[in-house]
Length: 346
Image (tube, rainbow, N blue to C red; front, side, top):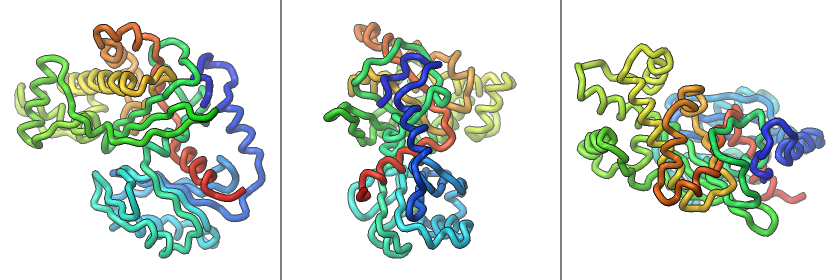
């Protein structure tokens, strides 16, 4: 793990590690890596350590399952496809045994059956945010944007969360001179409102779904749900998608969309602080997923950091912890590569 990105313009161990790796010789056979979320599946072929080619994003809804998506991707590779002997898949669900069932998508499969169907010698299937956590040591300063805090402490635990189709959470903790990933489902912990407006949104969600988790509101569908609750208080407006809400907020053309995005960012600040306090993330909190990087300056100007630090007697503790927004295009693939390499001889 890097020394927590103290200086955003200097070379750091993570960047040097990546640069050295790119000079390594090609593998005897290409390796497949795939980051499968509730909306998109991102594929690539690793031809040398941390060197990727043939990137492709598939719409999960257009395929009946992971096997169909894999076949569709491999078919695009021509004669390269049959050469793949090892594969690693990060998937947005707990991986607790051979049978895997996704949380936000009607896909389920057997790891052993999938390996046999594609004649892989080694198939690693792991939680997608565990994979992303393994990628953190490889991120360069150019792929991170710091939002508040001081230089991080090292070695110290590191927290990771990211809203997308769901809300992923994970972490890294120091262990015998390296870092061990912490896998969990913190996104499904109960959401706690912070003020009257958030209480209204919580009640709206509770009436519709019963239990209100953090993921219920801090995700793409959650942003749409927040907007629905807000517009219920005003004149009737049509339901908008998360992308439309974000775009209207960015353009300043719809006050309800602006309120929804502002509330979303503030809620995320509280959730990030809860994670930091829970695991003692003095090494920093990293924010991934598909939503926050697209918010740009809206996120930086939002109440996220204020709410991150607004924890009463723990304010001074949290004020020092840096938050980094991940801007790397396919970071989980890097983590999958690192995990797969650990399972292979040599």
